[in-house]
Amino acid sequence: MDYEYERKGVRHQLLMCGPLRGWRHVRVTERRTRRDYAECVREMVDVYYPRAEKIRLVQDNLNTHDGASLYEAFRPAEARRLLDRIEWHYPPKHGSWVNMAETGRSILNGQCLDRRMDSQALIVTEVAAWEDRRNAQKARIHWSFTLAAARQKLRKLDPSNED
Image 1: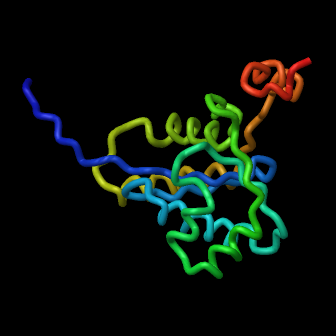
Image 2: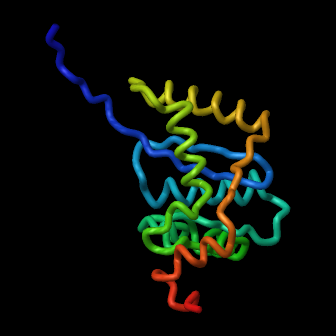
């Protein structure tokens, strides 16, 4: 049987997770833009953590994941309001495995996005159902990597960890 592969496009997922709460939320977007990222940050601050004084935001080192994205997407006062609520943390270069959201994204890919889907609407529906199940279970990421083991592993990347 001969068939022709028809690419329907790709989608980007922005995953927020509160690993100690057993909570996650995924935004599915058409592409990875600064505006998409900024909207995700605003949603996190205003909807999911509205009473938090400071949000410790651990994220990967993508070029869109910084405060400049907020200034590009919003008026300066709004960008500043959001930035004042966030404490930024980045994993070391080549150390994205430290980021629990990467672990969450891997679980999402294995449990939900492990097949072809032909529309963004279907992806959004499937991801929302997965998210609801995982949040209802309060499924947490069981982090078994100790601080001592992390320091040993990252010794070459961070000279301040030298013995």
